Length: 225
Image (cartoon, rainbow, N blue to C red):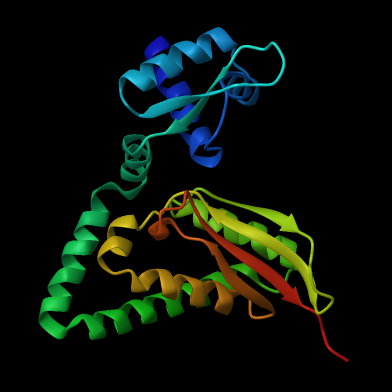
């Protein structure tokens, strides 16, 4: 029982650091409701496994320097592999075979068709609810597919724009495919735009560009007189 609990806590720490790249032991203890002493033991183990690293932050005044923790590449890979699973490798192998058979352009067209079907499926699931409800449902659908997704409301910066949200995905459940066929990322942006036709959708973050997450700004278009 203790081993299971420790494993679960370490997983929680890794997932928290994925969403909050610069975090102290105190922040982790507070967020996970665990004593700072226990958190530090887990952090020491994770550091020994080279899944996390830390830097020192010197605070003003007489306070001691704080350890600021973040995931290493190995830590991010660990989380991605747990989500991707072996079917990701099979998908890449299948797409490679298709590319050899019919060409990469044809494979890109096939992937576009797949995203169009997925967009239609999402739209049927989202229905005609308010934007906030549709975004919340979309987040849950993405979570069910292996994405660590979440959304946050944002204030509109233009009078022509209505309600807005930032949609974040802290991992890529299809990272293996995206690395070999990066066009799928462009199709994903098109898919979100098709799922929310009354909104503008812009990419704000991109894992392929070395960022910690993929992000999209979704803003409702106000009806014009």
